[in-house]
Image (cartoon, rainbow, N blue to C red):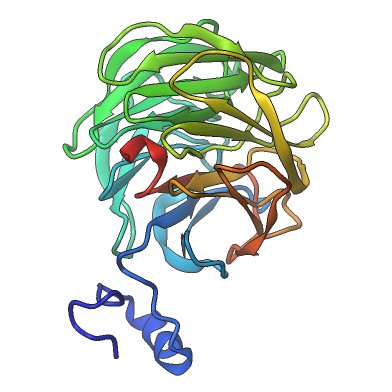
Length: 326
């Protein structure tokens, strides 16, 4: 058993204890944790997996969402992660917000509702330690209206989201990244545009132009990959799947620069997350459960990190160690 108060102390699910004891694989309760939520398997999934970001290895079951969803947005603080929107089994959008305490395990609890209409696909998240933003998204069938709305929440307080402002043009499945002061959104559908836009998280208002991606695309990885200084945008489609990783310096403005390549092309939204050193990209297609890893401060191609418990696309990623919290 782990030493009380030591790096492996924590709250563990009984179903995982036997494995931890047998192979001494206790998760480090002091290390940043990444969570991968929801997805398409091809049915909508309520699965939540977690990994310890500093230590390569396979994901472990965390708990479940309230229903099977795909295409959610996620935001997170040092303690809490919030999943917003997404599409349900009937391909209708939901406006629900649900949360977990990241360093425990278990099912989500109700947080509140998005301020704007239900979003079946792709509200993009950016957050710091206090506030989380959900930007853009695609509404439910049959018309699938696309929105330019940005909502915000105070992550520590359960409540409904509040209007923040608007993105430059309506869009969905953008990539999102953040520093402690700035939220940045890259690309979007429809149109597979290369626009990067930003907001100051602690204020309210519309986005401003940041620069351009190296390649216009939508369905970029969902979840913050950031060191606090540098932000990454991984994967996407234009119109075919790509393996592109771009990076920006978040505190300035300017065009993105090529970082390297993922291990495979992304056929749709992949789950992305990070601590301030390592960025992870999961589930490059429905046929794989791969998690890729890069070191944010360098450049180069991704290497293997481990596997999700179940391969799926339209995954949403979050962590308690990303650069928006530094």
